[in-house]
Image 1 (tube, rainbow, N blue to C red):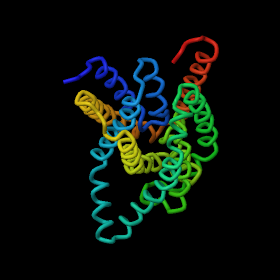
Image 2 (cartoon, one colour):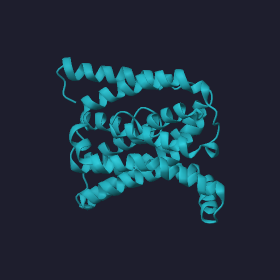
Image 3 (cartoon, rainbow, N blue to C red):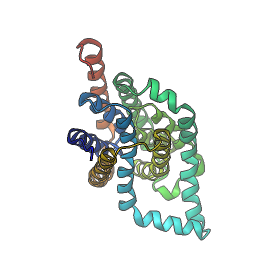
Image 4 (spheres, rainbow, N blue to C red):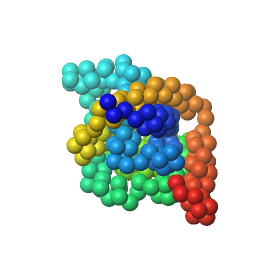
Length: 275
């Protein structure tokens, strides 16, 4: 078996980063790119790995919200309005990023998957979070995910397109879309969780299709280890994040983004350190 222990250890580090950052608004993809460059976890397999292990984090959402997901699925197939509305909202919000992601995937991979563009996105996203939260968070009229309308779902879905720029954060983008649409922070965050299910399944499917599933036995084991690690870490982080949002502002995440982004830009530009 061609199992590379160093590769597995690097993969575990990246999976921990993914599990911590997937659902908080600081960009999991951006952090995986930065950390991956620091530990020399790069290349075709690394790119596939970083997408596929996001399914591990998504599995944590399915486990934690299983009752709500299963109930809504049953209601959908029974033709009940609540189930139809719930999944219609998710599908409507999913379409914009799916369309542009499929259309621009190669260009995004070519031009935006590097530390400099990630650092810039962290700063831009952080500034937007501060501005939008200050202006719109207190004006929320939709307090629960069940109250979200089709119009609000469309706005959230359009905002999710910003996350195609690595470093912007899918979570941050959808939450900002929720704020502007009048959705409370907790409801927008939970909607972001459910929206992640088709979004990440679609992204993983596209990645696996492009890779041709051409992985060695050692790489398959590494993918499995990363998947489980991301799942376990995300399981812990999601509950704590939702509890935090009930009483605390998102500003702390925005400030973190700006500090990290500016620091990275300085390192790249002036310190002559290659990331």
